Amino acid sequence: MPAKYSVAIIGPGAIGGTVAAWLSHSERVGSVILCARTPLDRLVIEAPDGRVIEADPRVVTDPAEITEPVDWILVATKAYDVAAASRWLAPLLGPYTRVAVLQNGVEHVERFAPFVPVERIVPVAVDIPAERSAPGRIQQRRDGTIVVPAGPAGRAFAALFADSVIDASTTDDFVTVAWTKLSLNCAGAVNALTGLPGGVVRQAGVADLMRGMVRECVLVGRAVGANLGDHLPDWVVERAETSPPDSVNSILGDRLAGRPMEWGARNGVIARLGEAHGIPTPLNAMAATLLSVMK
Image 1 (tube, rainbow, N blue to C red):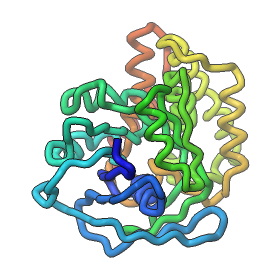
Image 2 (cartoon, one colour):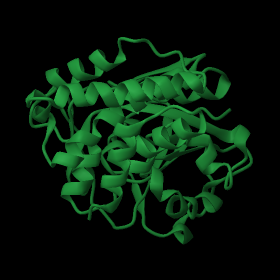
Image 3 (tube, rainbow, N blue to C red):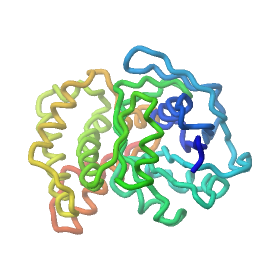
């Protein structure tokens, strides 16, 4: 076990950039590599407490630039971008490398099982509200949380964030944690569909629509083993109502920037698994269908 870990983060977006900046200041991390499509000069994070966190990790734009494996690979790309992320894995993987998947949805392991031995994959539920204004420039809205499955790998991963404001912890019931996060994410499709930021929840009928989407998610999640309470629809709406009205979630940010959207991992998976279990999910199915044809 090394005294300090070497870490590579694939994907310098809002989550990847925020995580990379904090890990660059961690006493437990010896080196940070940021794997990006295009170069960036440095990371500048506006932290929730008003501080500005800057970091200068090594930035590489071609897998051929990787000369040795790392201890931890953190995949922070969009859920639909697995194929592009996978091209970085071979040069970064060593005999003991772990791959932490920091993506939306509930199928973290399934996405990367074709590329990495399953026992080396650590699924990560990330809840760090952050928005990227330019390459390497990110506003972190809240301290945020990271949750991973209990066990030696999970404990080691959570320990990487001990020197940050991010609350990293382990759980014996990751399925429930992942589906709880999906409850938040599925309702966020309303922002992408309307093109409006967080304050849209206060418009007539929107809160009830969100509740309906979350109820569908709860029923499907229970069918696959998640322990989800009846309070979740109201909890998701309350969280939306207390968030800054100008906040832009990641799926809306992608639409506004003309990027592909994660409708499959957020709403499509609920419709797909709902159909498999005989559970109607008309709201999430409609959201997935509409988002899939938006440009």
